[in-house]
Image (cartoon, rainbow, N blue to C red):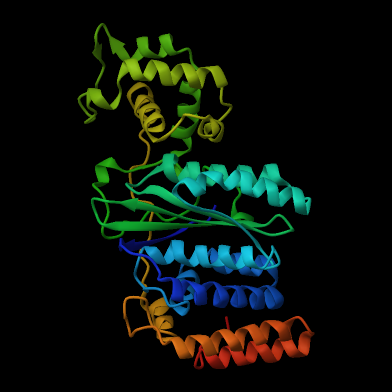
Length: 373
């Protein structure tokens, strides 16, 4: 699995209605043009790229470095999808908070109408969210999950986590056709600023965590009483001197309840463990620590991000301005001309290849000499 990550400062507020009305129209036109030129899978590739996604949000007029860019940009695409009656070229499900938990039902309804492999798509949505919330514990709590997919069964995920202490949000991008194993990813674990205390980080998806993953699933299959006897002596929890684990990290009473649940399901592997309802970050952390205590296998605790620069995407905010006035207030007249141009381009793209090429050429001219989207 190839995952790329972006860090954004938390901002309060939301897009005003007058701006969002324009955002979803412009977003819909851009999506339709890209689908016409590069196909639905080509659109997913762009959404899965954090640099392109950031530039996309800037062109739509949102704050270039705000955490809200993620949810508002995805929301604009979702609204464009809703208003198109499903004719956008890609399908959209998910949202923030409680809405994100309705993603599987939304995927299922769309899949039934389009005769798509709903179970596989729902599996991808659920497991990608579970991995970033439980298997990767980097201090960011997932609160928004958007799932994009095509009639061919291709998919991508854009989801975001929040860290109140640092004042930052982190966006995670997944692209289905690069996923070979949901729980083992060949990514670079490079720290980015700001990050939580490294001692509290847990990355069970790192390539070097394969042994820790196997042992964690193995422990979950063991009888709870037997496992607790191995790690406790009388009333005291066995804690080796070489590791700074507090008794609160592994509470035998709570562990018995968790282990009973896991033992009942007998997960075949780490991915199976993640799929068990009720198994969350605390369960994974507890079992990973037990694996270290019993077997001496240390799970990686490095950050999972890599540095990225928002400088290039930020230049796209000069297309129409930004919600909070940076680099200048949104120019409504220019924005409306852009919408009119692109909606005309979309109509042209539906006519034939020649008109489509002309529409894309005009779009590239609109972007003042930058590469065509």
